[in-house]
Structure formats: C-alpha cells, structure tokens
Amino acid sequence: MIFLVTDLDRTLLPNGPYADDKSIPELFKKLETVPHILCYATGRNLPMAQEAVRMWHIPLPDFLVAEVGTSLYRKSGNDLVTDTRWREYILSTQKNWSGEHIRSSLGTYDALTLQEEEKQNEFKISYYLSDHTKKDATLEIIHHTLAQESITAQVLWSIDPLADNVGLIDIIPATATKAGAVEFLRTKEGFEKEQTFYCGDSGNDILPLSRCYKSIVVKNAPEEVKEEVSKRVSDAKCTDNLYIATGTPTKNGNYASGIIEGLVHFGIITL
Ligand SMILES: [Mg+2]
Image (tube, rainbow, N blue to C red):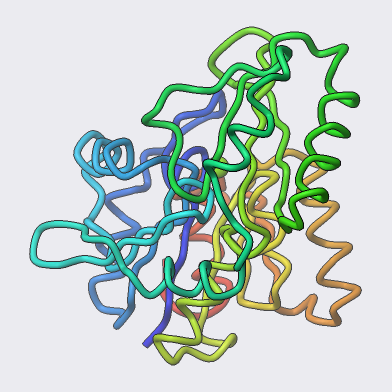
C-alpha cells in the first residue's frame, strides 16, 4: 500500500504553458493495480477542487488537503466531507489563533484589501496588496501586529497568476501548511515515509518535497524549485528519495507524464 499525494495545478493538471502529452488517463489506469490511498494537496478550496475533478476526469481522492493546508477533507461515498481531526489539531497547537482578531487588528491598514469571503476561512486570512512598493513595509507591519497578539503565523506573499501585478498575502497558523497537513495525515493513517509519495511543481510544494518522502518533481517545475528541493534533500541526506522528471523518449515529463516517470523510477508501476 502506498500513500500517493499530489499537487493539482501544473503538477497533475496540465494547466500551465508547457507541452501536455495527455497522460492523466494512463496514470490512473496504471494505478488501478497498485493498492494506494490518494490525496490531493492544493491551494484550491473545496468547490474549486471538485471542479478540477469534474473538468479533468480525475478520481475523487481519499483525502483533500485544500486552501494551502488550512482545511482537510476525506472521501465519504461520492462526496468529500470535513476531516475534523485536522481542525482540532491546529486549534490544539495554536491556542492564540483568532482570525477575527487578526482582521480587526489589520483592518485600519489601508494598503491591504481583504479578499473575497470564499477565499477566506477560519485559518486563512487573505488580502490583496495592489501596491508592490509597499510589500516590505506591509509584511513588517503584519509580523509586528501578530507578535503583539502572540500569534505564531506564517505570512505568505505571492503574485496572483491570474491578475496583473496583484500581490496576495495569506496569513495562516504556523502548523496549517500543506506539508503539515500531509505529515499529519501520514502519521494518522499509519504510513511510513518510505511508503509516501509527494508530487509537486512550485513554491508551496518545496517543504513537502523535502521531507524525505519519495518525492517527484515534474519536469515543468521552475529551475529554482528543482534546485531548492535538491539542496534540501541533500542536507537531509535523502537524495535517493528525490526524482526530478526529465522526460523519456515516449513521455515528455510534464504534469501527469512526470508523475508516471517518477513512479516508474521508484518501481511502483512499469511503462
Ligand atoms: Mg502546482
């Protein structure tokens, strides 16, 4: 039995600018003969993840780590339902967490605009920052505010891939990351690291890709992600557990094609 965890956008799903050799059906066909528990780990929220399942004809996963690790769902029949274990764990490790408090403390700072309600949850406070020149000053103010409230949080800054030059800021509990949620599930479900596979392509995959699971980086991942993951697994002395797809004569190594290449490399499936 393996625990197969994969990021969605630009890892399993071919929704980036790179060549797609349409390997999703082949991947899941090959997995039919491999006993496995399937988990998607994504920045998407539940409705957007369900939309991906419908649109790309991928299986409903056994588990869904959503909203960059701030929520966890498990399969129940043909549906995904909240896995309350994760919320309880986050709350038990983050006694001072209060989304309401963070919102009201930062509410008067006018460089920040709250994102739409559907992009927020109990453990994810998300803002737009339209003026990039204020990034450093804004992050400093946020960190200072959190410190005053004794809240240990991660402040994630990124650029909206869908909108020109809009900065995104997510404030989430220090434990509520993709990597944290995957590790939580792995231990709760009783999988060894050696049985756990993580497939990814971008910045928020670096941490789970560097945890000495069997890690697969798809070929279309940015060079800096490949370099950073290589460096981290080398420091952790588990380079044998990392595979970076390069493409083969029959597969281009991008997206699901790269996942197949990695699973072949680790001896889970054959071409
Ligand atoms: Mg991705």
